[in-house]
Image (cartoon, rainbow, N blue to C red; front, side):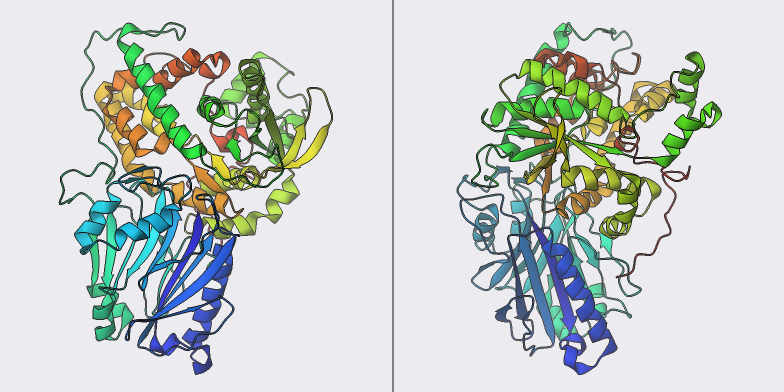
Length: 607
């Protein structure tokens, strides 16, 4: 994992000594972006600069000044978090004048990477043997794993950049404008600026720019308006590319007499093989993501893996499967976050039933006085289910040391971190973005308390794990949202199928880039086993009634296939838990008011 920053600047902005106002502003922006990306890769950082006109290569560290001598200067900066190979690797990767800034993981596909090798090094070796843009496009269509990259091919003077088809890694771009005529590509922003206009790079294409052509035009803004080539991932020269795009949802309509199975303890005959196949493919996805994590220290008993853990079915199934592939002598950190939410506390203390959400109001009216008793501020729904579920895991896996990390976030601390989080979120900027980003920021930081033994006092603990597993993706693929039930009630099975296809189509455009920017700011990498393209393809191709049954009650009919799998594994309590969104389960949402989740924050965070 790494941070990527690339700047292509014109002659007027090459040197801070020119006195150009744009040049001075650009240098300040670049310095801020280097610092922001350095947090993502604390092990190593390096700058490489290329004179585009003369195609000559020079290297310098971020704090050194390079003498620029061409019409355009391309600056490549990368920071490295070592998670692959036996030794530390310097980024950007360089070979025969070509440069690769790689923020990704190759878990499967045509580029073979052994546990002792670095995948970025192997990828650059493979890229150097390719001659055309189509060949490069086809290569990335054979790679499974999350990635964002910028690749400068010295032989052709071409610049390529892209994200993986699901957008599992962040990559932001500022196209040249009249106010800031440089191209900026970065894993993360460093705040808002009137000059900067960062947007998420689309995942539909691999972008290619002929820098010789741009140089001949002499104006970056005009050049990028005319000469950016968008290479469609679907147009492979070697037949269908396995990992070029997510699979399409099976459109077969279930028979009208499809039976209902309202119990989880017996797997229906027609699903026996499907549950086994799902277990095998999901287990393999988890294995590929946890098997070769380098030790975080020489100290025995340090956790290499952490899991965002609410006690819900998604995180619990991943936790159990990860247990299969991590040596039993190592602990696994379960990160459970809870927020002190003044609004919730006021409601509880004031006994204002009328101000409660509809579902809680109904519950409070049925049990007067009980639901409004004052509770500890961190005794939130996800803390309750997390504590319950870790006990089930301890019964099933008694030889494993489970570090249940209680990440308690006082209100003042969450507010003090808000500006930092808002900067990391950019360009995401809704109320819901902030609620989720708050939860992810503090959970992935891993600072909290654990209990060495049941009943013992809590002790301070900071998770050393650099890899964090997330259960994101299961709701989209298996029908876990309330809108899937709503679609069925409004339009039967076809409406559900259409909604599931929309879910897959929306995955690259929603929150994965934001989540990557938040979690990586702690020098940690998030991995999503449900979003392996192999898992996505397997689930997409299943008939819809194999995955969910909206005719059944919540807790059975949503994500039915995953619930059957959990029961099969012995995770009985997890298998029947109802879905709860992270921001509500942790109480990170609506701390100060009732603004709609899709409302724009309208907040400016200065560079």
